[in-house]
Figure 1 (cartoon, one colour):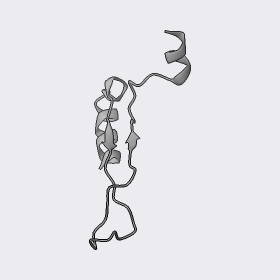
Figure 2: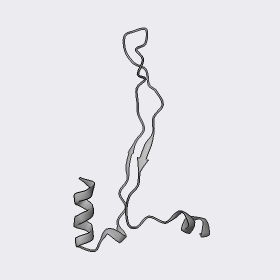
Figure 3: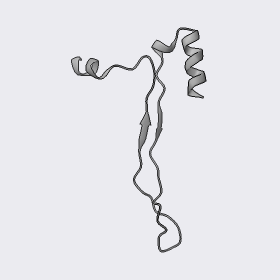
Length: 62
């Protein structure tokens, strides 16, 4: 899905002004707890593709 969006944005020359943020912050433990369920585990992930995002060195120079 992101690849198709990327192709369309490149085709219309708007990729360089685009940022896409995909994030999640919730997860469950793999192990079953005493009530036969699962507890919250640690979580967190982020994906930030896009032509408008700054390169790491550009952020340091600001």
